[in-house]
Image (cartoon, rainbow over all chains, first blue to last red; front, side):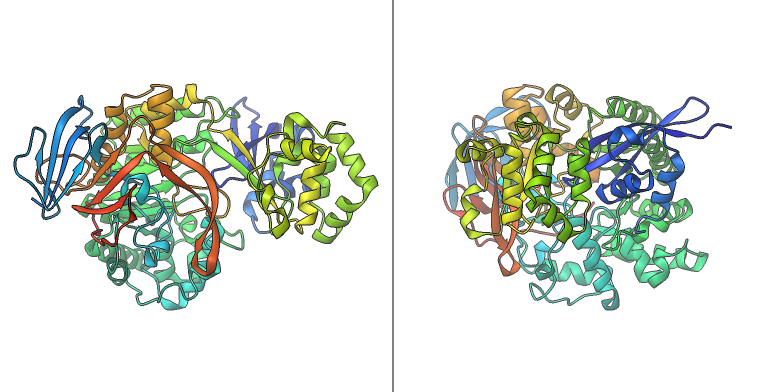
Length: 74
Length: 555
């Protein structure tokens, strides 16, 4: 089974006045969903994915996001 | 008669057309509405040319701490807010054991940006129980307060450290139920919980460790009193929000309670978010559930410093990489002319005027830079013969990376979408967050913005409909039975304003927190007088009065 991947990464305003990263995940069955990361989580995602720009996140595995969500203070 | 407000345009909160006449008040209650009241009163106010409306109710605030040293909840009161609901997002100051105070302070600091000084000497911790907190509050209230009890602190009380480790067992569930019951008996208007917030260590707050069975058990207690459940959902994650709407609907129907979730934002990044959520809300409301999405009136601004790697820089990899460097390396890199030239070239040779030109300087720490506050980078760049990006770096370095900047109106900012959303019959106007995020942006004046922008400028609402949304509708949603209308017998909470000029003022830094702590505020425009339980609490002429007529109110 193919793995869910990041289809889109955009910056959006968070309710606390900071910029947040909004990721669109595309699942194997064609469905999609959104996940938001704060500045700290986003920085960690960039590091994990060795990304330098937003576009680099596209196509990355959703497992990277899961890791960050499961260990928020890591 | 204690007070007669004469010749006003009475907008009574029902949404029906306004009418002209007098309003009479005795013993803190409205006793006469409309027509000409004969005779005289102890005090009279001439409201000719002004709107006389029920006092506004703000359903999402974090005034929990501030109210202990400022019973007027400044500057909310001067905006016409006569009732505030604190204790949102799972956080309240009670019930709280003394040993858990440091943990709560950490959560408040992380989530609400409440400084140390606010907890250290600004008030005396005299309570552990919810009624003890209310007793401390009542000493000098000038606004009405309808406080929520926070799920996170209830969990902390019962489970201690395990509150952030695991689900509750049966005995703990029963203890939490009993504790919530005590809070509701004392006067809590409901329970708040959060599915998204983190503490100062970026770990989930206690409420996030609860299983649905725990929320169900607590909602059962709310059902005994018919009180509110407030939640913070995973905003922008539409599918999860839909699931939360369904969960709330089940709890509402099963326990016959009202529920509300806040905030619901419109976002260009997820353009179908609002439509999908409202469709689900409508579906559940049609089943008889009460699930109220709270929507704020103001657009979202983004504020940032160079201390943290803001995602605003994610569009330019070199900048974002530099911002993620350790502090000293970051300063060295930004101070290196060669490195800076590289960043400028990446941003665009013109310093990326389009992106940085309109960003404003929010705050600086160097006294000699104080004159920069409030000005745009474009303006400063023109004066210095530089570019906005270079100016931004220079100001940051000069202020040890602690200068803050504001990029305004970046989200929830399309009035053609937000206006109709606010007017939607199933939308609850709120989510101001007043009293929170105090060092990032002002959370005051949303009601003024509602009238200036969505009533006067865009005409998404009639004046009467807008008043109803933030008075009678709010009171009905929360079950506050004796407020929200200009009606004989109800509490005399009244806001008098000029509909031609009511607005929120410009955002400005104020140093009125304990120990001269800074926060951002907006003062009111066009409000003439604010009356709380029959007493003049604020007026444009005399400012804040010495009245302390605020009460703890509940459903």
